[in-house]
Each structure stands twice: as C-alpha cells, then as structure tokens.
Length: 514
Image (tube, rainbow, N blue to C red):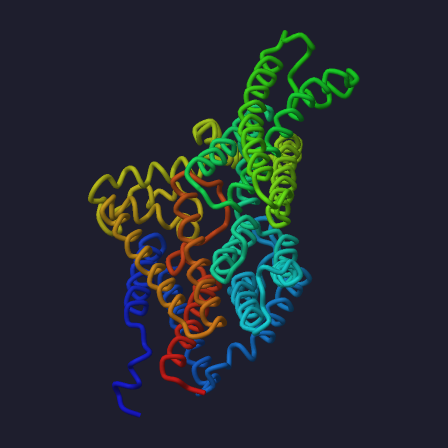
C-alpha cells in the first residue's frame, strides 16, 4: 500500500488541534502545580499507548468496535458496580478506584461504552427512532450507567450523558422529546424564585405567541390543524390556571400554611395581587386562544358545507386530536413542575441549594460557602485583563485562592496569565476542534460511525460549554472537567480513547478495510 494511501484517512486538523489543546493544557497545569504538570504529560503518553493498543487490536477489521461494543459497555458497567463496593470516597462521592497514589474514575469510560453500544443498536436496518419501543431500549442503555453514577453520586457525569440527545436527534429522534425536558427544567429553575402562577402565565403566553405566528405565516393544512389543537389546549390551560388559583382558597388553613410559599394568597376577592393578575391575564389568554379557534372552526365548517364531501378528513381530525392531547399533557407537566419545584428545592442539601442560588443572588452573598470558588474564579479571570500577567506570573494562582484550580477551574489560570486574548483564542480553537468532529461525523459512511462521531463531538461540546459557563458564573458548580485541559488521568485517558476510537473508525472507513 502506497504512503499516500496510508495517510489518506488521517484527519490532520483534529490531530493538530487536539495536540495544541493538550500542550496548552499541560502548560497551564504545570503553571498551577509543576508536579501535576509532569504527571499530566505522563498520563497523556499512556493514553497514546492505549490508542496504539486499540489500533493493533482492531487490525484491518473495519467493524471491530461495532462487534465488540457490547464488551466495552459491559466492562464499563462492571467498573461502575465495583466502584460502589470497593471505591474510595473523595469529596463525598464514591466514584474512584484507588491504587496507591493513583486514582481511576470509571464514569469517564462509561461514556465510551454507552456511545458505542447505542451506535451499534442504531446501525441495525430495523432501527427506528420514531418507534417508542425502540426509543425505550435506547433510554434503558443510557439509564443503567446513569443510575449507577447517581448512586456515587456524580451529578456532573450524569449531565454529560444528556449530550447523547444531540446524536440521537441527528438519527431521527423527535426534537420535542429533547425540548420538552429542557423546557420543564427552565420552568423548574425559574419557579424556585418566582411565583409559579406568574411563571405559567408567561409560559402560556410564549406558546400562544408562537402558535399565532405559525398560523399567520404557514398555509400547510396539517400545521394549521396542529396549531388549532394547541390553541384549544391553551384555552383549557388558562381556565385551569384560574380555577387552581381560586381552589387554593378553599383548602384548609393547615394545608395553606404548608404550601404558603407556593400560594401566597389569602382572600377570594382580589385582596391579593396574585388573584387579580392570574384572573385578568388568564382570561386574556383564554380569549386570545379561543377566538382564532372559533374563526377557524367557522371557516372550516363553511368549506365543508360547500364541499361535496360533508365531513372533515380523518387525517385532519387525528392531527387535531393529537395536538390537543399533546399540548394539554405538556402544559399539565409544566404546571406540576412549577408548583412542586419550591418543595423539591427545599429538600436539596444546603450546598446544592446555595450553588443554584448563586446564579440568582450572586457569589458575594455566599462568599464563605458555595460562592467562594466562583468569587475568586471571576477575580482571577478579570485580573488578567486584555493581555494577561504572563506565563507562570499569576498572583491569585500563586496564592492558591481558587480551589481545584488544576482541575475544574483550570480556565481561571488561562484568564489570569493569558488574558482576554488567550482565553478567546482557546475558545476559538475548541470551537473549531468540536466543529471539525461534527463535520467528520456527518460524512461517515454508515450510521454506526456517524452516531458515534456525533456522540464524541457532543460529549466534548457539553464538557467545554458547561465547564467554562460554570467558571464564569453562568452554570452551577458541578464536577465537569475541561477536555484535554483539566488535570486528571481518568478524564485525559477517557477523552483520548473517546476521540482515538472515532479517528480509527474514520481512518478504516476511508481506507476501505473489510
């Protein structure tokens, strides 16, 4: 085989960008702690050795990782079960194996096994992500490692598993299956600090506005029928919201006191603003929803009367009924989440509640507890200004003010020593790196390689986005490392193997191995 043929399948862009990120990461870990920087270099070298072993093991078999994906998955589950039994508890989580001075976190490798097995599952000719039974099997594959990780507990790793939804969407998963949980999560977070009735009114009016805009600019009959159903669902929702508001007043005094933080109302006759606001805006929402429905109904009835066929088509009726049911179910779920969110929030451990409240009230209020990390993280990044203080010259870094700076908060070292320019350059390199992986994934020749490629890119994107958002105060503090940058053998090995497998698959597909 000619040298040009051998080099054909190597994606030099990913290799070069990845090498730049790893090198810059080791430099910054070394700046924070020279001993750990040397260890990080060793971990990366061992990770490359693991990739070479996988290259040799796979040989010329293009389907090696698809065939052995169940083995990767089972091994990852065994490691997750084992860590619950013999693992070492660190920072309140039993998530590490301890071998003398070395630690191994199996959750980092569970992502690889799970992505490979789902890719195998999806590559079958009868795979259909429109089928609820098939979706249930996919969710079961994800749920088993997620439950085991929650038992440690390690919320950060669990959040990363949500990134697989991007790859599933590419393969045909209904976007509403992804959007609905996101909407409910947003409602949950807002309802913690706002009156649930107001949150639901705003939510209802947002959906109402979207539905009316779609009706105004879309002439597809199926879409019109669907929006017709959504408006009917919204009209019912606004009436139910008003009814619930008044129903609370009929509850016993003991019940009202128990749920006082949910329903801060006392009188039936608008003595509290919430009664008037809910009733007034609820009625406005009801009439805005129902009037277009009546107009559409009258128009349709006239068309039916003028037509030789005197009944509405079965397809239109099915679309209408489904959209009514779907909208009511979503709105009821949203209402339930909004009303119970303060109760659930109150039952969370104190440090978790504070991490969320830092987003609303700022880190200064919690500077002695959960806001401490964020306070000094922002201070370190801001002190770097435009050009930074220079490599290994960070004063806040040297003062050890930022806890875990070599791991989850390594981006603060970049901000302090390399400034805004260095931080922006790193973000751009990461964006190009992840974008290139998405590009390669899209151009794979089979669903196994494509799904796994999307899973790799999505996992890295979630790590990158959430870690930086956490460091600058846009996301609660969770244990999510910056890929190829944060110190840690397990995470570095995990990311190296994750991408290494995809590049091997891409190479073999490009070479046409059988």
